[in-house]
Amino acid sequence: EVQLVESGGGLVQPGGSLRLSCVVSGFTFSDHHMDWVRQAPGKGLECVARSLNRGKSYTAEYAASVKGRFIISRDDSRNSLFLQMNSLKTEDTAVYYCVRDSMMYSFDYWGQGAPVFVSS
Amino acid sequence: DIQLTQFPSFLSASVGDRVAVTCRASQGISRHLAWYQHKPGKAPKLLIYETSTLQSGVPSRFSGSGSGTEFTLTINSLQPEDFATYYCQQIYSYPLTFGGGTKVEIK
Image (cartoon, rainbow over all chains, first blue to last red):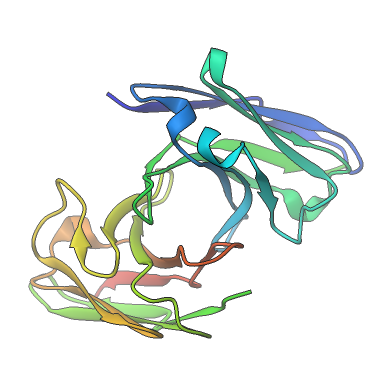
């Protein structure tokens, strides 16, 4: 059974940092692209960071809204995906989902979501 | 960036109705479009990928069509569990983008 379990969300002040983790199981992690998708309160879905698979040399891609502040990384030995969020802004407040790319043009498995609240 | 315009943004319907949601891309995306269902407090759920392929376990009352820049999600005979927000997503080029969402509510 495929599972994705996020952790690390919480309350942080503007300008602060937070690191989200996602531990996965039930599939070969290195074969899949992985993404972080967020939903701000009352808003839609936004892909913020993407880690391509081993075949694509784990290339990272970022949305313009977080580029230069967020870093996506992965540790295949621990079946884990990470999102290091720096210089956080109030507009980064959202639920952050760890997501598996099916490799067939879709996101087929999602974690339960990690809430991040940026406020002074 | 490829923009996805989804309409209507809000839809009021009754159980048993047939409803359709449209997603228009700002440029051609071949058939690389997916649809998701999202309920409050839950993770989004993949319904359809590659425009018209039903994800395993999704009821056959859901269907997708289209190509190029215009795509449609159709729900035949709306059921109580279908009241949710629906999003389209293009997986053609990064940044991968979502439509603004269509909230389907009970009339």
